[in-house]
Length: 345
Ligand SMILES: [Zn+2]
Ligand SMILES: [Zn+2]
Image 1 (cartoon, protein in one colour):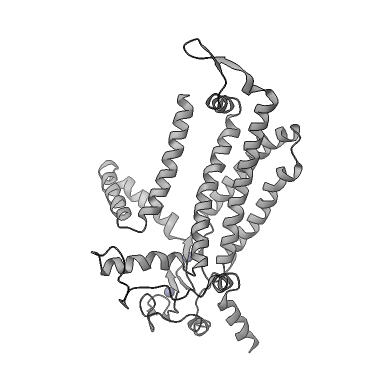
Image 2 (cartoon, rainbow, N blue to C red):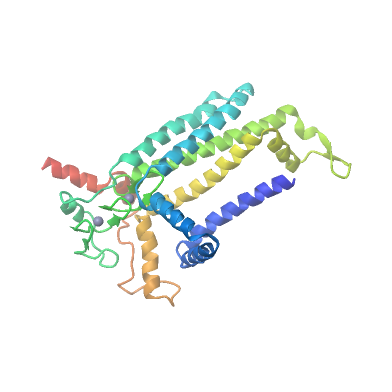
């Protein structure tokens, strides 16, 4: 019971932590927390170790490298090995439908295709040759994207909705964010692949969670475990309840229950992130615009709870043209269309 309680406690702590970070990411709270945490660590950790840690963090998050891509593939491989090794064989013995058992593998293949496409597709790199085409795609709003701004690194005019990625050292059209998991920027030309990648990753984790849950329930039903009794710490005979069943399964099939816990947490986290990404897609915003838009007026009007409605300096999303048009822009990117047109001419 203690073990189960601790496991659920850690799980709840993890979910609350992630949700808190998501909520605080739009307020100065997160920066304050990070600064406070860094100060505490600077007292506790020796200076040479701090420098090594900073170098490692710089390498991991501020340079292009394949660490997270390899980590992603290793984790995916481990989860699928566990599933094949622990769940698949026993499920076949319990005569599960092969269609459900092999669905996670089908999703894995589709996911790997979109993962590879997100990694290798050009997100919309702005070069001397194509900058004139990109400049025509979006209107300048003169708040977040003023006209005639030059990128000091690339020495090119910045098209509206573009941003210079300091990790890749290039300007990217309709810049969303730099994703370390795919080691690439997410921009105008690969947002669609990234969304399918997220969707299939979430679906494969959720399918695996469903199959593992059904497997454990079936196991309890077949063995009639729920009809049994047990002797508690005080020597009293007790009828088996749900807590006892979970604990029993945890001790009998620890790897299956751990796998189930992991894929369940993953499904919730990926599901939450996918909902956020779909909300941005439906409203034609990028993560960069969503993040900077709120901070821009907060800096100008720190005393106000909401942006002033009539102030022309306040950023407003002017690129939203209805759900269908917004989705079309992501799945049939305008810039690619412009590029094709240019080649045809
Ligand atoms: Zn640039
Ligand atoms: Zn990048």
